[in-house]
Structure formats: C-alpha cells, structure tokens
Length: 188
Image 1 (tube, one colour):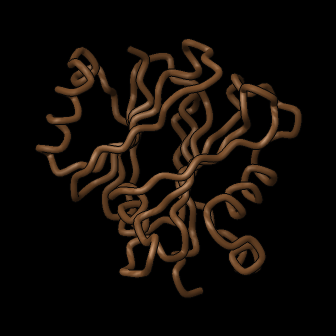
Image 2 (image 1 turned 60 degrees about the vertical axis):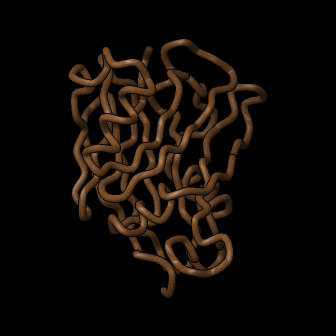
Image 3 (image 1 turned 60 degrees about the horizontal axis):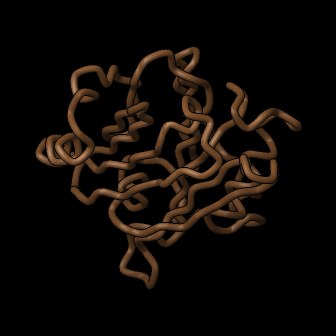
C-alpha cells in the first residue's frame, strides 16, 4: 500500500481508551484520499443517527496518500465529521505541517470521540499516543500556548470547544512546527 501506513489512531476522550486499528487494504483502494477514506471510517465506526454533540460522534484528521512527499499538495490533510448545521457530512481541507506529521508519526489518520470533563490534549510521538492533562497550559492565552508548544518542537492542531459551547461552526487552526503532534481540544 504505497502512501499509507495501514493503521489509524482512535482516541476516546470519555474513557481514555487509545487504540491503533488496522484499516482493510481494500478501503485504501476504494476510498482514496482524506475525504473518501474519512467518510468510510465514520460510516463504519460512528453509530448511525447519533447526535453530533454526543459522546458517540467523532471527527477525524486524515492526511492523503501523498502527504509528506514532494508531490503537489503533499502537505494537505482533511478534517471529517458529522455536520452540526444539517446533521450530514462535513469536511474541510487544510495544509501545513500537521498532515505530514501524522504520517511521520506512523498513522494514516487520527479519529477522536467522547467528551472530556477537563481540558486535555492528545500527544503523539513516534507511533505512541497519550491523552494529557492540559491544565498546565490551559491558563495561557491561545497565542502564548502555541508559542510554548512550538518551543517544545510540537506540531499543533487547535479545535474550538464545539462540545462545550455547542457551536455550529468552529475553526480548525494550524500552527507550524516540526516534531511531535499535539491535538488540543480546548474549552477557553
């Protein structure tokens, strides 16, 4: 499977469970790229009819098969989820260091579900992931928090507090750095 690692990372913020799941090879052939593969995985792992703000709802961050290469659009990745606006499909595309960093960490994507009762972040380094308490960095202003993490050599992906504020549209922001991956689901 050229361009793919063969596994996805699944993180449940409610239970704290972190699991690497192999993805069937035919899915990679039949659903090429972030939006298509993301749709297939959400269809398989997210219960049909679940409320977008429930613990069962999930979102995914998926680099494409060329992510991390010198190929045109090699820095692109896709965010997939259920839309809170019309309860259907939702995806967005972005560029930067985050997509290639997911691949470099050994994954074809990261899927997150559940709701944490406190500020947390997902830290991924060389194929090992953990949910970390964000209390230490949570009081920082957003910009100061990003600078602090970049100084630690971390690639940052920020997602607004959709589960806490129940907002219908939230930004997914890139911050550039090299090294580990940090997905911060914050509530400030």
